[in-house]
Length: 63
Image 1 (tube, rainbow, N blue to C red):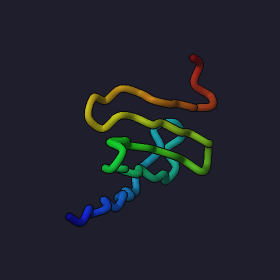
Image 2 (tube, rainbow, N blue to C red; image 1 turned 60 degrees about the vertical axis):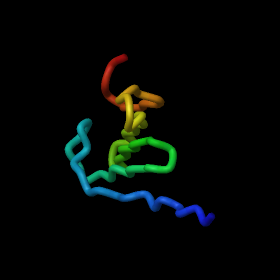
Image 3 (spheres, rainbow, N blue to C red; image 1 turned 90 degrees about the vertical axis):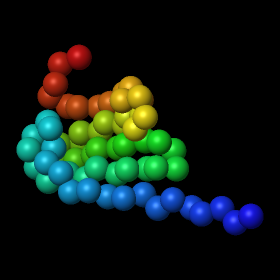
């Protein structure tokens, strides 16, 4: 039986931190969604199934 590798999809979005153009990567093989912004270094990695945050970094937003 042959396994089909799922290709991640990339979506153009606005950064929730600074409003600049950013990218949202839907990594279906790992059930992850990664949003990243090159302008302000924003990063959010979430589980696509549960919505739980795996990793987050948002400069300028107090913890």
